[in-house]
Length: 244
Image 1: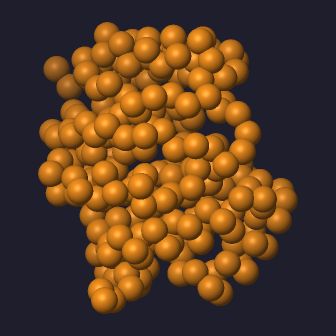
Image 2 (image 1 turned 120 degrees about the vertical axis):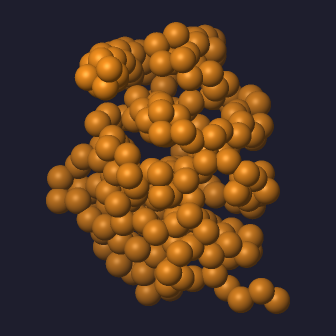
């Protein structure tokens, strides 16, 4: 039997960042399942929980969990959104690859195995969803259109830019990220591409959410995402002009 991977390894193969904001209901199951999956996969790893200014019992539950499951805790006094939480997690990471995994989606072996098979084959392993479970017609249209807008603005041709990716840790920790929310995921890909990253697209099944509805179902989120993407494009273009 292989030795159980531990968060104490100096250079783990994988750092998984888990942002958490008011996640008292699902945090325990998320961390336990993720820890079991990563150990069963035989990966040296670390789990980095970023408590993003939660006002419920998330911090208390995290403290209790830490006595039974090894993981790193980082606490924000104020909520900084998923972008701020991920940036904090990246700074704390040591892994060869870094991924972001939401609390509301269980990390089971069937979800992780396709990524594991591709470790070391590219700088960025891009998960591309075969089917969009629970998506409305409007959300499906948005999912079809969004990668095409990203390609038109940034010349980045990927089938899916908003799902689980594993990023080269050294490259990612050297990138300055400016965006929050959904546009941050595109910014990571664009900035890594500009630094010479290689990409491997991987067909995966969409993980079923443990509860709630996707934020992409809200028109306001779609609108704010588009505005954020355009702001990123404006910033990116200005940076390119200064480089000339």
